[in-house]
Length: 392
Image (cartoon, rainbow, N blue to C red):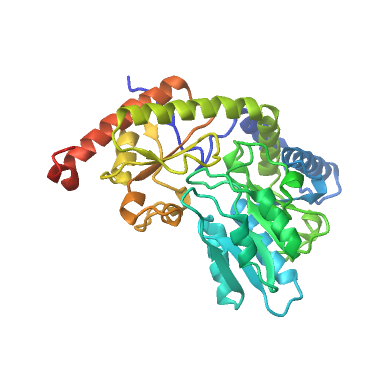
């Protein structure tokens, strides 16, 4: 009988939590009302949406009225970026972001640039962290918005958002943060961070795909991205995805209830995993190891080995890992995040990402170490570079 598979790609998406599945099935079966309707079925749907809004707000330490439901993190990012830029009265507009952002932000920056908005992309250090002073230097009198992700989806490096927020406040500039990877893994308090906008995605915390949220600080100006009805207080038109939102709310409550204990457990597994690999495999490097990181994320570089064959070999052995961000899979280019922190194109192609979740066990982690050790040894034997160096 084949061994059960082990899932180590939680930064791409997470399994649907059992509580979420049960709750969504009930709503899909019985909660078919439109949340904007005034009859009993509609009002039941409205109560489900409002309850979920309170749960997501509690996870973020926000006021429920500051939470806008979206179709996911990408829409939340785009709403904040295009909405803030469109709402300003400045005749010339400028946007600041970094070179390591998610494509939802980087491609939005490209689109702004094509519309005549000035864009500055601030580089990050080799540790994967952007300097608040570099952000300060990039801000001009025309700057409307700064966007810096809270934690990187590939390396796990956590950014100094609270310090960057103080820089933005001093300059009278709005701050958006993509917190899709950090929410549910580490404590996120929008008041302490000092952000004006913060994007969240349900499928990263055990909710379904297709639902997310944007924290929008009370009083901040933001034009809607879409046009239609008056849903979400006029900030996001479209009939609410009641079942998905309900599932998101359940997932938020589950994440909030045991956040620190889960984070400590996962970080212990992650650290043991990395130390075991460094003991077993020559030349392995952990990217951004000296920076504050998400407790579940390992970005690993195996010089002289291509990452894609490693992912395939591990998949055949029953382990799901990735060679980078899921949104960039299939790209012939190396990860922009890894080249942004100074890796060569060759080394960037030699990396894989292992992202743990609360369901992973020590037995699974040690089995992954064994399979990864064997896969790297085999692929290095086949490598022309390693062969020419006598399989050092």
